[in-house]
Amino acid sequence: MAGQGIKGSLKERGIRLTRQRQILLDLIDVSGRHLDADSLYELARKKDGKLNRVTVYRTLKMLKESGLVDELDLMHLGGDQHYYETRLKQEHAHVICLRCGRVEEFFGEPLQRLRRQIESHFGFNILIARTEVGGYCAHCQTLRAREHSELVEREPSPAGGEHIKRKGRSPHHQTRQEHRS
Ligand SMILES: [Zn+2]
Ligand SMILES: [Zn+2]
Image (cartoon, rainbow, N blue to C red; front, side, top):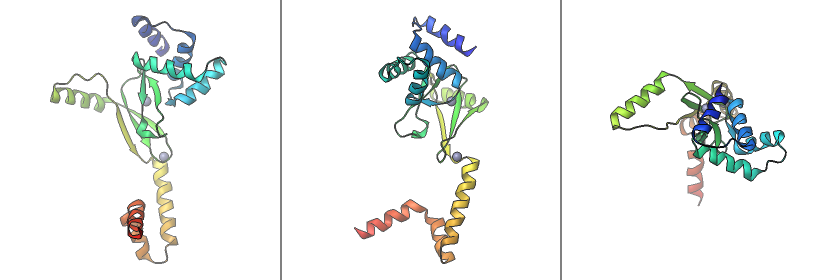
């Protein structure tokens, strides 16, 4: 279904569906995952050994510019890396775990409501909206709580544990370095 939708959109836009475009669109569409350019290149090469990196990157750029795929930052999960997904999917928010990198998709009416509210508030015509939420998934929260309690156990005095809990790790570190220099 989704594949045909994309082919229809291509025809409307007068874009020829070359073999490499077809391969990439299929990969992005069918995987349903958020793949970066390198992963897409690796997967595409398995289907056509002649495909090179430059062609894959150029094709992704073209698909993005023609509005067929979305380019996502996903909270810069992989540094500068971008991720791709089909535009045909219903609008959704990306919920990203900053520890394990798991990406969940939130679909639903609240997003449409937010869109309508923004449009009426600013008299704005929204063409594209991206919602990203970063934090810790349930699994990572458990792991972090365990790591934290292990850290506290290792502290010689309970006061030390309190210290860590209140101040957090990085600001503590920074103050120390400032004092030293
Ligand atoms: Zn996680
Ligand atoms: Zn998505």
